[in-house]
Amino acid sequence: MDGERRVHPDCINASNPYHECVEYCFKKIAEAKAKLEKQGLVEAVSGQSRESLADKRIEEASSEEEEEDEEDNQEPQVDVTKLTGRKKKLFELKLKMNEARKSNQTDVGSEKKKMEAPTEPKGISKQKWVEARQKKIGKILDANGLDMSKAYMLDTQEAAETKYKKWEKEPTPSGWDVFNQKTLYNAYKKRTKNIQVDIEEYNRMRAADPEFYREASSLQYGKAPKISKDKIDKMAKELHDREEKRQEFSRRRKFREEKDIDSINDRNEHFNKKIERAFGKYTLEIKNNLERGTALPD
Image (tube, rainbow, N blue to C red):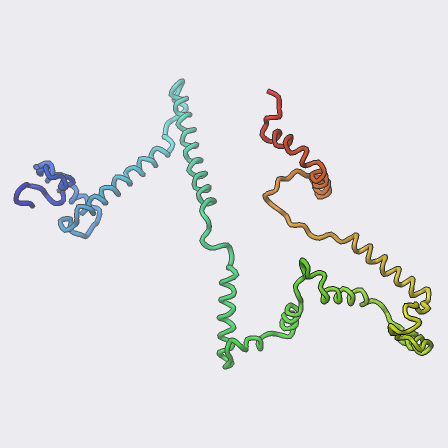
């Protein structure tokens, strides 16, 4: 205790510079110590600081409040058959209030779970799977006396072939790369892939014409050789097939989630896009008024 004023360090009002402990304060401190000893606390109350005692009092108050809330949530044990008039209505209202309180608590809990992002997605994440696979491969390589640079030696034949096919696959050209020489040459090879060449006929035509390979100084430059009708039919068929493929081709459009949905199926969506391109700038104001509700009469 202080020499100037009589204040116990465990008193709840010890921080007040004008407070002096009386018999009531000592009585309350003794009751608090006895209560703490009954609860099985081993620590000496005299050595505890004022903050720890305040925390324990707060915990006791919160536990009492929780007990009171549980008592409120519990349905009152009353014989309904004996109730009449207003008492019965009051009892029914209390039951409804308890049910509403319980349903609100469950809804709040479920909504909180939805709002909180999960710490770890369901299953194993891709990064963890890769790390575990690298550790497994590293153990096998260490057992065989190899390092990670020789990891390809563990691949099977099928896995190696699949990997090589992926490496050989070049990215699709985009922009002006579509018209470069390499792309045009690849397109030419694709077109001539299914053409069957008759070597015997080629040699016969070359032997019959001394100027088969004409130069610019040749007098027959620009003169077309005689071509059979079946070759012309094959060329016409190839052009016709190309035209059909071009008509069937349709590039995959990007799906935009933020765009408003104003169609019932794919065909209707395509039709709406055509209408929007043709009349969108004229109907923009009307559409905005309908969405805001200002176009409707009062």
